[in-house]
Length: 578
Image 1 (cartoon, helix red, strand yellow):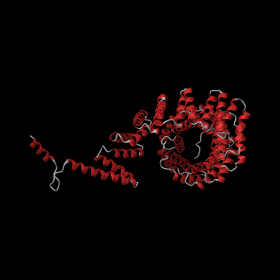
Image 2: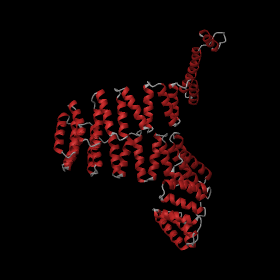
Image 3: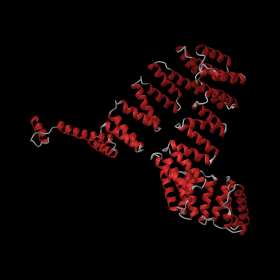
Image 4: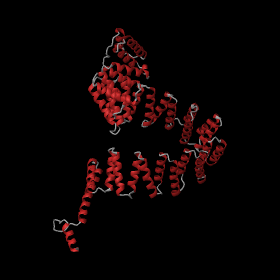
């Protein structure tokens, strides 16, 4: 029996070219070498940026060894890049399955599930990771946040308690527990967390200030004051102390003393400008948060600026504060100071552009964008807003040049901005009479964002004006109504397309819906309503709507009224020439 078995085994083994017998170990060795070759080739391709070859070679390596966790992990990265989220998660799950002790794979899978909103799966993985690695603080924090997002505040606090037991007390842990206790109205526990910090760090004024702020929230100002006095004894220059004392006086009804505390700090030569800016910023934040009068803060800004007129952070902060008060010219002046003294500060240019946009000042938009592009020629937003302003001023050739140049600098991954740019190109091409280019630009815009509602509406309306592809126009306009069924502009477009298709009764229904929802404030909507009324046999009422539209256009200074006047004079519908 034994001899027979031995013979069977020997006869079953393959024979090598040299006549020797190939054992299973030899075969496994050759398979391993083959796998190593393809994996290393994939890594070489990846290093050289040949990602398509790397991806395909990894998949081939997987055919040799489907249990390779490193290949599954690499493939997961590629699936993620290709926005194949479910396949990315599945690949990383297999990497974890075949290497269950690999910390990095499990952390990556937990993080991916967290980012993709797979909360139960993420919680399960982080629970395992915390149990295996109790000393890693970031794992506890991720788990606590996931519990919190699931509404399990007790578990969120419990996770932080576990971390504290393993790593010891720290400000980060205690402050997070403080916020969580407050969120579930466990005020005594919340206060206890800050008091523990204060006991551990008795020379830190901020904890006494926090305790004082807690008592202020509880409407116990005298207890708060005692804490603030302790904080002052520790660190009288602490900016948080100044702001808290100002709040204390405000709650006591002494607004003059409240502003006085801030003013003293801003005039103090012992405080550096960064601290003074922080104090003023906190004070303003409280004013805005509590919806109190902010006029006094302007005087405080002036006090600080008298001492530091060239401090750009102060100019930017004051400019933004002035924007919040709709003081456009004063805000523009502050941002202008920064762009002149620090022309490479792009934030200042963006703030200056924001003011111009808020004021709807087309010339100012063009000027700001033009000047900004000298310093930042690769920022597409400046090209876009410049083009938009030029378009509104009917300088179509210049607008076209700006849009065509700007779109070159938009990253391919920024599909929303690409959609916006091509939509604008579509508008411009139509105005310059290049209809085919206009349609192509609109189509490209919708390739990047098929739900770009502004482009869907504009494109549909343009097609209706050109009396072409009306079915396509109706479909796009109908999509707009699904998103915003009561928007008078979109309803008007849909009504006008139906008019162009000869469906006058249904067109009348929609145009009246547009007017009911605010469209009666638009001369174009009233003009369309008159056209539709004429086609449905109500000439008298049609003329009334045309007259209203004409009056509105003349009041707004519009000059394209020849066809409208002709319709009124002859009591007859005529198409607007395009």
